[in-house]
Amino acid sequence: MRNYYLEIQQYLEKFIYNVIILDKKGIKNNGDSLSMTEILILKTLGDQKEKKMSDIIEEFNIDRNTFGTIVTRLQSQNYIIKKKSLEDKRVQVLLLTDKGKQAFEQILLKEKDILFTLLNDFTFNEEKAILKFLVKIDLLKKNTGLI
Image (cartoon, rainbow, N blue to C red; front, side, top):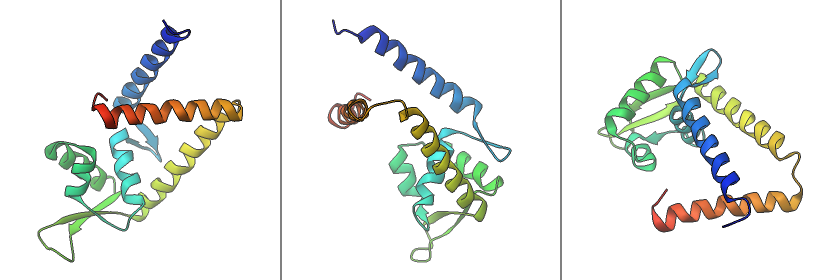
């Protein structure tokens, strides 16, 4: 067996558990509580002026009803606007409000700050090893569909 297999497995399980708990509790943003899926949607929209709802549903492989609930929640909190596409009136698109754009910027800054804080104690070679591990996890997902 590998040298650190058990320890790595235990820490990965703790990490996954903490992510699930954090998602259920929500991440605080200016008094609002956002799920991880809601944050990912804001990040997806933050990179673009607007995006088709159907593209987001496909990208996240999310159920339409669940997605509709998330969109309604983000609209009620004034993070996004849903409107008909100018090119095709049958297509619904989402875009960020000013509050949504501010939240997007805050999310990016928080993520950057957290990552820099975590990596601060690692050497260059340790960072490369972490990156290699994460790339392999991503490849495992893409090549096998197991994750």
